[in-house]
Each structure stands twice: as structure tokens, then as C-alpha cells.
Amino acid sequence: MTPDDVTAALTTTFGDAAKFSPPDAWQVEAEEMRLLVISSAPWLRIMTPIVPIVEAQSFINQMMEANFAQTNEARYAFYQNIVWALVQYDFESLTLELFERAIAQLTLLKSQGVEVFFNRLMEGQITQIITAAKMQGQSLEDTMKTLDRLYSEGVMGDMGESQYQQQAMTAWRNQLERLWPTINVEEANR
Image (tube, rainbow, N blue to C red; front, top):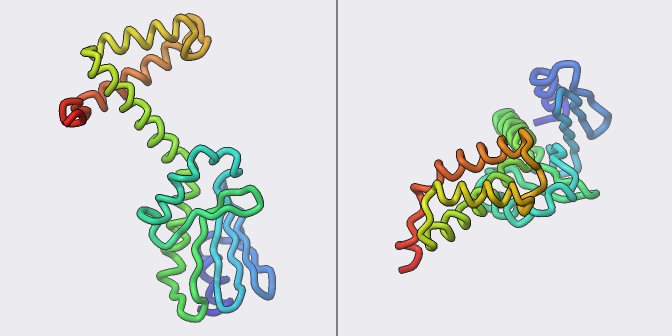
């Protein structure tokens, strides 16, 4: 690819939101998306900020694991207290197809933010609760009653009898009902 090819591809994808800053940088500022493209011979870096690093602190290990197994050519990177999604290619060998695929990957990572890692963390914690409940011989309903009592007593946060407690209990029930049948404590004890 050439710098003109990059400009054309970004303009095709993002229209007027794509800006070229001669001699070696492009920036896209579009709804919820900020994309930076920087040529630094022999590399072309394409990147987007995800979240401030303080918001991702609990998920850094998961992000590094995702770099290894899930993000394809894209990588999570940390710079100036920001978590970035980044793809780096040899500029001369870069094709339009690879460039477009990189933008799609970065757009996906940006749209997911840290929510995917938060959900995995929560699912792991809910799995631990289910495992403990099943090891104690509790049923799903017993576990729900325990959680309701813990919320009512303020142990799980002071929500009183508010709508938030009802919303929290509905979310717990949905997750417990979804995961309960997947946990087999007899296999875990072998």
C-alpha cells in the first residue's frame, strides 16, 4: 500500500471523518470511534483507544491472554495510561484486504471495550457461587433465597427494598439459571 491508498481506503470507509496529516499520519473521528494510523518506516500502525488503563486494571491478565488466543492480528497495548487496540503491518507488504480486516478487528475490540472481560470475570465468580452452593447441597431456590437475604441485610450492597435490589436479583436469577446446569461438582471433586 501507499499513503494515497491508505487515504483512499479511510475516506471510503469513514468519509469526511478521515483526515490525513502529512507526511505520515491519519486520524478518524467518527461516532464513538477514534482511529489513528501512523506510518513509521517500515511499519504502519493502526490503533484505537479502548479505555483508560485504570478502568481495565482488573482485566489486564485476561487481555494478555486474549492477545495470545482471540484477537487475531490485533493486540491490546498500554501506552500513556490508555488501553489501545493495535495492529502493526509492514507497510510495503500491506494489502487493502488486510488493512480493511485490521480496521474491522479494531472496531470490534473498541465496541466490546472491557465488557467482554467483565462478563467473563462475573461468570467465573457466579460459577464459584454455584459450586459452593451445590457442594453444600443447596438448590437453585435456596441459593436465590440466600442472595436475597444477603442483599436485604446489606452484605451485598445497601439497596434497601429498592427497584435496584429487584433488578439485581433478576440478574442473579438469570445467570444462575443459565449456569446452574453446567456445573457438576461431582466431576470437580474427582
